[in-house]
Image (cartoon, one colour):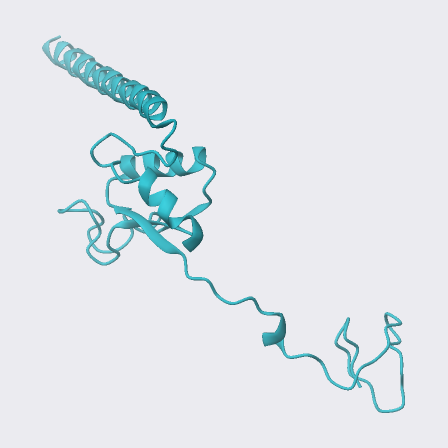
Length: 168
């Protein structure tokens, strides 16, 4: 005799669980009876550039598509990291996976991420979506250029200060 709630085993003749008061059964159901079928997620995007992975993830998040990322955290751990080809030779590119029922929409959204013009699932609003996303892409490019310029200016200033201190 077994308790279906706490899975305690009892000798024959006892009808209720002494711990939780549940009526006992002759055998416990198999764990496979409760296991959900394993659904393998589908890869919708694979790339080695961290900035494209971040953009692809933000597009999926804004569309409300749940996703997972494989291999992002271990790119720089094994071997020579991302050197020389930009992707870890042992791990391969970073992969974004989604549920199979959302894969078609995710692939449409991410179809042109590498070129800088993401697609749109909804045909009726395609022009508005592309215009808004184009604005975001231009904004991101401008921010990247600004940060690059500031970093370059910082290093130029540090070099100038170092050179001036060496001359003194």
